[in-house]
Image (cartoon, rainbow, N blue to C red; front, side, top):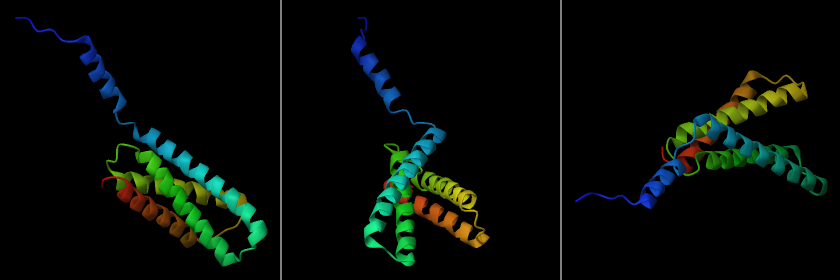
Length: 141
């Protein structure tokens, strides 16, 4: 007796293996970073429009700014991990440090202000912690 393999079965197996192939870390990181930046820009625009009517104080602006950063990191980690939730803690922390380093660098360049290094380091540490927590919640450690 000879064995006969159905052509449709082989194509389905090949197609399935291509569809679930994990993406490269650089591609995942760039995608998550772009989503984080987009979420930040949208939220800052909405908050800027709301500031015209609400006239919040400085402390409220700082709190909302931190919440926007945390939400953007969480959204970026969620998109970055996608279906493959492996190493969520590590990848989330990596996205958090990249996002915050980019934000701190742009702030330093655009504002021209010289803040103490502890302020910059605390922002970056917050990004690492937020990204790691978001990755641990979203994916598998």
